[in-house]
Image (tube, rainbow, N blue to C red; front, side, top):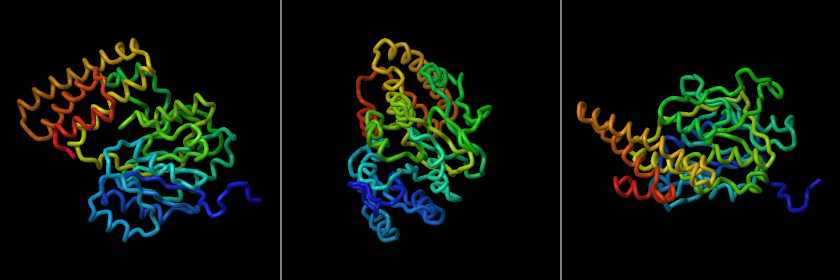
Length: 327
């Protein structure tokens, strides 16, 4: 029976993809969805800073895809939200453009929800590298101290959060956090909780979303049998000059949770770590001059500037991008 206000023509799933003018990433991703998605779906692609030529070609090559143009400087959260607010599906499948499906992952994740509690909000797939090796399968709790330790290479996030756990059923496990590279979420819950938090430009919007869902009483799960290939090294290295400092600032904002004291106590060891990396990179560049070493050195310099900045992650990204003529 049709519910009041329900669109009976709406697809089961809205696939949401953000692509920054990279047809070489986007086309294989779209082809894999066409080949392997077994449920009714719509695909919305945020064409971020696309050239006119690439956008025209993409629209011609993919007439069934809804392209949402994004011409202003926006981060991962803002760009995804442009498409998410247009989604008509019961579920949203958020997917990076540098991913590929090799089976009906979306259909499997949709089926998982029928066996999960009503408060289940997200089911994420396992992420694998192009060679099939494990990249990430769920994510354990990630307290602020781990973030500081990770900057000193004293902590490494486990790849598999299902080890030693009892599944809810089959290969589905409860997890604490998800990766923004691929996950299926109930659209009404995503809308109710405010979509992605746009304070974060590049990371940790996925951990922030997981935390917000847990705080609201919703469940987050991972299906170990559902695999998505994530070619995570496909992005240009020079963009790290703007992306990394924005990510550092965003992470400090999230983990300090509005406390100035906690921010300072967390920022100090992070700044020391970034400064140590900067000194090391300076020496490496002196001994072995190269474009790659220059980018690393200047990235660590930008990270140091960002740590105690009062600017937003977006402002930091824009300032750094202008300084290094990235956009």
